[in-house]
Image 1 (cartoon, rainbow, N blue to C red):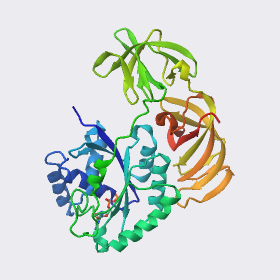
Image 2 (image 1 turned 45 degrees about the vertical axis):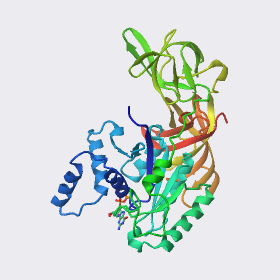
Image 3 (image 1 turned 90 degrees about the horizontal axis):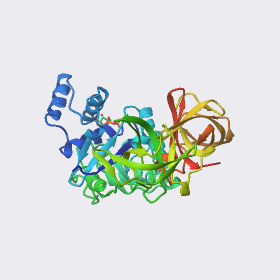
Image 4 (image 1 turned 120 degrees about the vertical axis):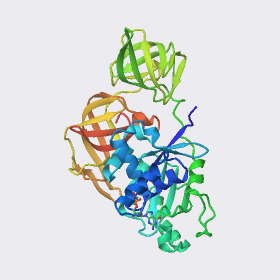
Length: 412
Ligand code: GDP
């Protein structure tokens, strides 16, 4: 049986050493496929370049882009304790997008901050995003210690700068480690050059993290992803986002309100199972024709409240600003609805935390807005803290993802 994988996101300003650290984590844990390092080494030599650990990440990205690593789970490194999947995307914007879309909800984060360059604007924006997404298992890695003479004072100075920001958004790192990603110091093994640091290495710190628990104790929410015809039967598929779904249970499908009884639950490779809990992808047979994509199943005694207006914190990603009232689409779990922003109650600069404007008409790139979103037809959303997958959404302009956000209050 496979070990459970912890999803890890590595954030930090460009050039602070994210790719190098990722390369190191793969190399130092012996997680690269056989011959891969030699291949990368030969390719670097052919170009007359010194081998860089960052090339490992480039290489993994290329494979993914060429469709060779279809299964993202292959891009993992392993310790004795567990597997780690790294959520990654080339480019700053794609990366932010990836972090905000449902498929890549991370369990933990490593924030890289170069001890040489110090805290930068992007460092702060990334931290803000971690906070927005409710990530609270965070290791801060102060990188490039080799370039600052392994000085404890420099580590403490950059740490103090970062803490000023962290305190203001109420984040406490789980662990802070001085490292050299390039030289592999304090990552898998302790560095003899920093005897003043006696805490855990990055890998030891990661192994102490716990996998995020799924909301099994909450009422059932089953958004339907699709309906398939299988052996003459119509099977609805979807992921149980909260609660535990049981055979024989009645679900009420929102927003239309139709009721159906669960006659069979199928999991991958298993036919008729008794129940399925939050996080499980299942096929379901009902006593009547299944509801279509976007319908959300709830127990009749614990109904969600479909709404045409909700409050949200939104991180705006597009170069062209958001205009209040412009036509957009909101995608939340499997639901897609036409919408527009009714109010921009607050505009915040995600780097300085400055509240730039109240009751604004526009929101600019990398700004965070406290918004009211109005949909043209009812949508089922939940507060992000309660059911994360129904509390996280993206906004589209045409087919482009232009923002990501979390629901702060459902049913405004
Ligand atoms: P990214 O943009 O955050 O992915 O940064 P990279 O991993 O590409 O690193 C940027 C540059 O910093 C590269 O030239 C790396 O070789 C260099 N670098 C990364 N980590 C270290 C380190 O610990 N020490 C030194 N001296 N250089 C480093």
